Length: 311
Image (cartoon, rainbow, N blue to C red):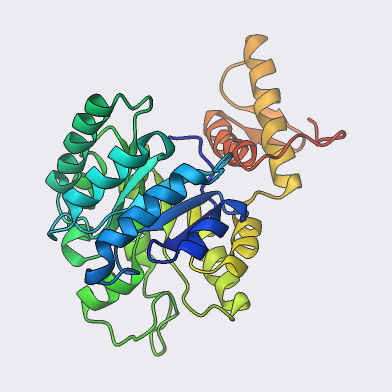
């Protein structure tokens, strides 16, 4: 699985030079410059130019930088990829592909990237992120997740998914009144399992009530509890909440590292199977869980406390 931190993934409209210029200064782990839903059909070409200019001019140090193109099923997708990769390919980490419904859509972007990287001598291999936003995309999620070795993430898109499923909702990312539980649970888990089976990260989509930070936190806590790696932010004020929720606590991180350290030491000494760590029995499954949590902590910049928990 990629080691990039993607706790918060900030959407920035390609139609707004002001927002594009501000984005590098914000504390999001990932910033994606959007050519799709936030840009009108008449503004697509100008937005491409805006995005290229922002990528070249901005200092994106420490961030994962993506560009969301239009769906492969539209007339804009190929020109989106050609324009931004030809103009700023050395500044792009990933191309985000929305509304993916079949593996060949990802394969198309993969091949186009390969051609452009070769043609322009781009010194990096650009990754791909795939959004699962429709019933057909959800059905094909497992095949999509294995469609390219460039893929790094699967992303849940609640707004388009609501429309695709015919849900009685007008705002994406909220609980559904009248449903006895989380109506997105199965969808989220299917995307998560598809992602993990292919070694990918899984990212939850946006919460659109910008002023409702408590509601945002509740939805982010839900996603993190399921195992998601991060969540979209559609406004800068959402970033801190999302980063906080998806960062392991210091106690969690210290314990995970201590479990790994203890298990490794005992393995060197010849111990096999389950061993004691304090008052808890740990085994290879415990090591795998600790490795996942420790990896997230390291990606988020955590370091061991001076007095971590010990065996």
